[in-house]
Amino acid sequence: MNLVLFTPEETRQPLPLTDPRARHVRDVLRRGVGDTFDAGLVDGPRGTATLAALADDALVLTFAWGPPPPPPDPLTLLLGLPRPQTARDILRDATTLGVAALHFAATEKSEPSYAQSTLWRDGEWRRHLLAGAAQAFATQLPAVTAGETLATALAALPAGATRLALDNYEATAALRDALPSGAAAPLVLALGPERGWGARDRAALRAAGFTLVHLGPRVLRLETAVIAALTLAKSARGTL
Amino acid sequence: MNLVLFTPEETRQPLPLTDPRARHVRDVLRRGVGDTFDAGLVDGPRGTATLAALADDALVLTFAWGPPPPPPDPLTLLLGLPRPQTARDILRDATTLGVAALHFAATEKSEPSYAQSTLWRDGEWRRHLLAGAAQAFATQLPAVTAGETLATALAALPAGATRLALDNYEATAALRDALPSGAAAPLVLALGPERGWGARDRAALRAAGFTLVHLGPRVLRLETAVIAALTLAKSARGTL
Image (cartoon, rainbow over all chains, first blue to last red; front, top):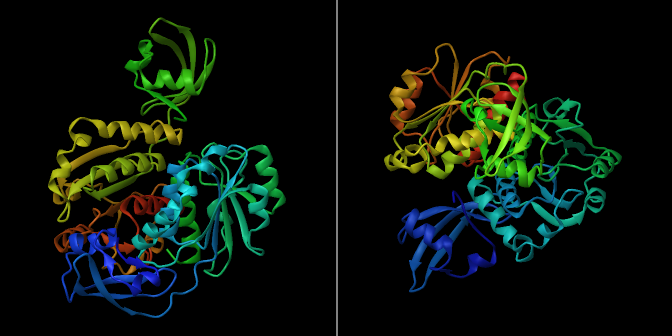
């Protein structure tokens, strides 16, 4: 937790000692009354928190915020709905690397039951975004959808973006050669679930303007491919 | 397990049904007598295995091997000894991406007890290399050392390689601008443990010819930074 993140409501009341952030401030950062630490407002500015007082069961904090954050990188990830444990890693790591939106869509080779996971049902997914942003020293969380059909997710993608889909079987160009440069160019990267795209998925992607690209001859785990693809995209934009 | 890997000795005897590879061939790949699957010899060729017969407690396999693999990419990773769970991920993912050597050295902010983990004591580390290679459809395992001092590890690095160390605090150039291009250029990438390099580590790295470079303003988990750094290095070489 490089940055301790709060919602606006949470900054207006003492932080209960049972909250993991309170334990982090006391036990890991070892802050006492009068000490400060790096804090952030979710989707807002970063700043400095001061531990003003210790109540019986809560920390009393005051905040001084900096300027608002820049708009997020116009990067959208479209993923075939993967196993929940894979999705947890992607939610965290894609947020750390910085994306504007993450869409987990049901594809031909997605397991439909994955959409019923507690990850998606109980709002657990947001916890992984917060962890990823705190790691990056960032405040912004991507927009997230999960469980829509691929057709619905494709129809809702931003217009005017370069559209590239990773594929181990039918790609003819390397991702690195297909990426737009310049930090402002909107980009959608699509990656299939663990078992890859099906024939109907590929047809739908091509019809929606996607080019199939690859990450070289070695077959990567989905979680690794997400990090590698975002790294190349960010590097081409000059932001990593 | 995209490729089922065997040592030369293992190909000369039936594969016990209790072996995870036998369960994979039967239960995941659903192969019967006469069927084939993709196999590899560790540090040797890839090829095709045939399930020749089912014994009571073992699979009888025959093999047809292809040409020997090309030499590994001359990429060396030098890491500050991290938590065992972090090291497991790095062992697997760096092998999937393809490196010639992985050195986990004790640095100022490494926890000495990490070197006593069962990961390193009981040979468990090799299992993660095998998983990473099988994922990549590759046979080659990196050379691995763990627990040496940083000074010893630095002294043993290959001569003539570009030497770049990731650093969140004192780097002045981006990794992407410091990478050599061309697949043959030897390269050493160094990353500190989770808590980063200490002042003496940085002095030792600089004295050994390392340039400190960064991966942008967002602070990545060590596991993520390893994948990102290897991705950029491989991409500059044209091999990803």
